[in-house]
Image (spheres, rainbow over the protein chains, first blue to last red):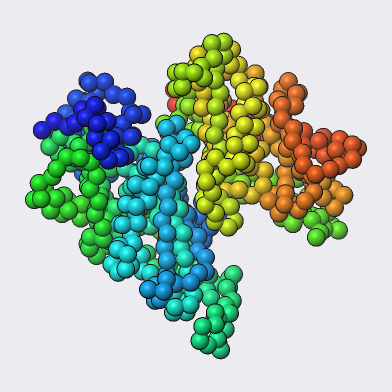
Length: 312
Length: 241
């Protein structure tokens, strides 16, 4: 089965916006190059020398934004993203008084590609934000969320922490979702949430007085935060950590978020082509193996980055 | 409020004529023609240059010179309080324009007719002097992209608080309400290409403050040259010459 050609992609984008089709514009490939990429994937030797299920080396740097509660920069090849966590005190939602709130938002900087200038990056930003929200936060009720929302409550029903997670794409060479997921995980492990002392005695509907400590911080538990593994199908095969050239040749992509326990926390399928249900199950088991590898690499990098930051 | 202590120290411990720590890095965005990261204390910006390339919008094409475009964006997390700002607000548009005009003045646009050069600056962290940091980063990114320029533009700000001229204001000093002079110069040609000031100053004081800003710009220029030279040496080394 051959992948869609360029004109078919642009036709599809009228039906529904695809990040792949919008990214396609900036990758100008000749027919020979397309065949080279597809052929390489079929033979399990990709253009950069990787196998189909090998991820690019990851570089993690934490504490890059000193004004934030937590931040991290993650580079995978030429893809470079920054994630930043800011915590603010707020009021829990009336329907979920025992849970804090987390908002994920992604921006694509025009530095990554000229097409993101002005409002050009909004469509992709929205797609990435929603996919991350789905992968990390679970459903509307907040149950099954990768991030433990109940740890963000200070006083039930009255005060909670609102976590604002901002992602920024600085340089883009494919696989943005996985890189953002990794950056968010790293930023969360870098996050210190100030200790809050609640003045006793407030009763009824009164908002209790709080004292936010600027010395004591609570480390955020990130052991359950999932990573995202995107499997991109090119031709008959699927690959992990696709570059933008490879993404331009994809027919579909499935992003699976998996935590350390091996639980699937969220799933997104992008791209127009249909998929055999048995292949989806196969993809999930492959993603699970890759995620173990990714989590281990990421954890050791995060630990190294944290140690390096404390030293300096 | 006291911005300069009786001992002559500023809020962040600097002397009045002292700059914040500056740091620059070249080639931070792999896919761009040229890119640079520039830090002045806590202010941190990234600039990327794309081009010279074909003009995207044909009606903007200039037959005798290159079209220079610039976009300034601030990350959501760049300010102290997280704020969701719509893209293209008045402040960003104005800064984009300032950067574009300043860079246009130093690029030899007549050598690249019917082409387009895009400069994108992204503020990662804002702590005063973003305008200056953006111009310095853009200058480095243009140099990294190998775009012909008359000279490097460098920029620095200076202000006047507690009857003392201060170099390189940070956010607290910037929002103190005193005068803030942002200056951009072509250090080799010794020409001023950008000058902005808010609030009022007597002519004599202005002279002092501007002189201080010029010194700042020259210091930045020296540093930028060092960074470029180091980068070129590394390129040379990698080529094995």
